[in-house]
Length: 363
Ligand code: AMP
Image (cartoon, rainbow, N blue to C red; front, side, top):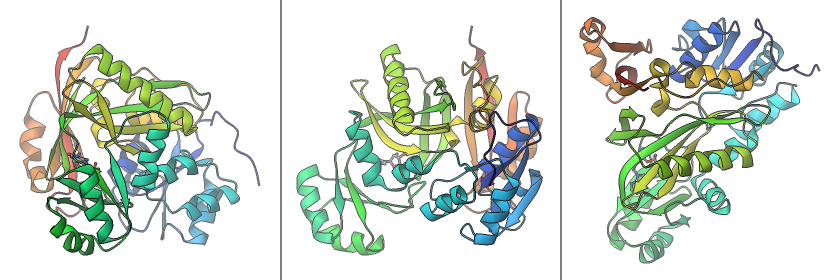
């Protein structure tokens, strides 16, 4: 077993678990810096595979596939957070470092562990209770007030695996509908806006953050991101501070996204932590010298981080499902910066691409 020397030299291979659009944009950024990318995905013809040097086509927990990935790659990263802990352990045993590491993944994979982590750091979240039975929901509603939001502890995304509970008599049906698995009941956050902060931590511990982004969702899926969010300086400072604490305490290397609720007072509550590049950071591709994808590759390769100040305001719109059919008009629109993910099939609500329009320059 050979230990990886950092910083990685151009020409080294970076492994990515997952073949979706985040993997694709990470692979493009890696290529720009002279790295090769190997994708591990169970999906043939995946969006990331089509821009990567190599694909291992297999289940994420296939031992032979992990051995091949470890043998090829100087470091392995992830484009999604629900990587089984045993996969990370197997990669480590095979001598392949991963970034981020297992603590960050374990924290982000379970909503109760995640919120408890933030509370322990003195970072505010909504009030919550862990749910193991339908009766826990009834007791939780009495504690948190109604309505409250029931979510599966694991594997929910884009509003999936969630149900609002308005009255105790809805508890049993909702518990069954979400599969009877361990859940969390969250108090309703009385937010005025949803914000997110994209931050990065280098191997040497340096932390940088992009300015706050304001996000609007449709049916639980991100629709629009506007950056920099117009917030008080104190709100920006609070977000940067909580991002720094989070990355330091998790001994994090790479880019992470933290989703926030802004209250009327300007105070922030953490909703969710994503140990990866984040959809609400796509605007950095067109409005920053070093975007979130390159920043992640720099961090995990042991390179210095780049600047995070945008040179223009940006408005990023996701192209969901049939929205992508407007590509020709968007391609013809001066100033519309179009990114298409090369997905073979258009499905309602599926992230097919995004378009960013830049606003006035930031002096
Ligand atoms: P999540 O999957 O946790 O990111 O939730 C998806 C969306 O549901 C968020 O972006 C919010 O719009 C909304 N949401 C999630 N949790 C809460 C909450 N506790 N109170 C109010 N709205 C929420």
